[in-house]
Length: 183
Image 1 (spheres, one colour):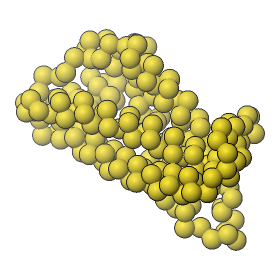
Image 2 (cartoon, one colour):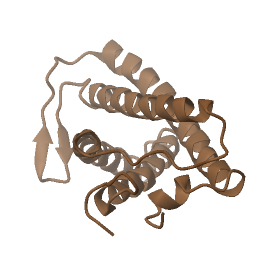
Image 3 (tube, one colour):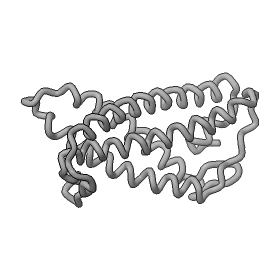
């Protein structure tokens, strides 16, 4: 398998970025959903939010790399498919929505994490500073936006996965196998 994309196939960098981010973001959603219900004396009360924030910063960096890679690489041509013509447009709009929601989630996560005026410690490697003064109301609004954005994102991830399965099993094209490195 080649490093870069071609008109026929995705390269291993695109495939690796896709699956690494998919697994990490689904994990982040699960951890985020779990940690908001923790009580103060739970042993994970401080650990999970710290891990969630640090991982979020790394995923923001990975998203920038992925977006640069997506725009620097040719996109493989659409597969020959029995799928209705509107599915191509739906796929494009779905990808735009996924990337847009990721940006909203990352920015709102940063605003929640820095609402008390403190930066974000990233695995004791560096600290992402708080660029705005402390503001409890901003933190609460950002928290609502973060939760709604993450819920919409995970819903769209489900739709995206379902669409890939429909392409594979119903329309029997190579949409899914190309992202698995076999098409």
